[in-house]
Length: 175
Length: 141
Image (cartoon, rainbow over all chains, first blue to last red; front, side, top):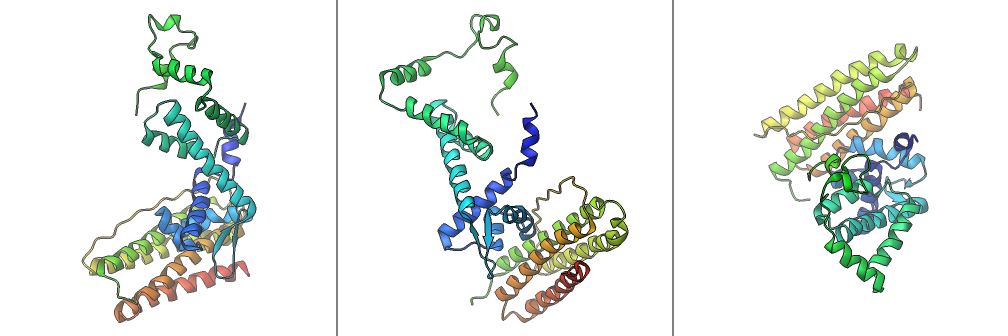
């Protein structure tokens, strides 16, 4: 598996996702988006914005008119909508279900939103629908999860999840 | 248009300062990223551009100091480890040089009426416009 290499090939990097979302936000706020507005919104230079926008224009995600006003193409709009939805989804999953601190959940969702595949996001939607439903099993699931003791008692050796050593220890403390 | 306060002018100048420092860093990277015989064509121009943009940054820094402030620098430069042709390097340079030129053109509109500052920005525009024209000429586009 050389999945990590795909990250380098992916045109939608973390930075690209933020540029596209900035265009979307600015259009909603002011009706237009220019390089200078994006630079201000993201607190970076215009040079940086122009360079980052180049591959996005070449990929047909962004369009620029003769007044240098930028807008998202249909594909760009779909992509931004998907990224924004994934952010909300991940945030809810981390915060409401797993109990991660909301601020941390927002930070982590921001890191993952552009990387999660549509297939995984669909499963997340299904899982959230189940967990947040009124079904008896879902209610029991929520109760069991809330009452679950994650400590490795009586010892890490008896933990079924960590056959290769304690995962909780290897993950590291909170940061 | 209402006149900008000194603080607002300094903020605008800090943005221009960041554009110049970032451009210098990018030129330095481009000068190293061009591979093969193409280096003979553009290396000298790119290295001279490093010095030129640093000089531009110094002029901006001086202007900020003359307004009683210290330049504030916030940049984020990511230059990928990709070999470049001379043409690709120049296209890249044209992208960020045009952005810097637009930054000064916008600033000129904002300082209208403040004659000394207007003159200062105009002189920066002249220098930047010349640099952009030079790159366009090299690209023959």
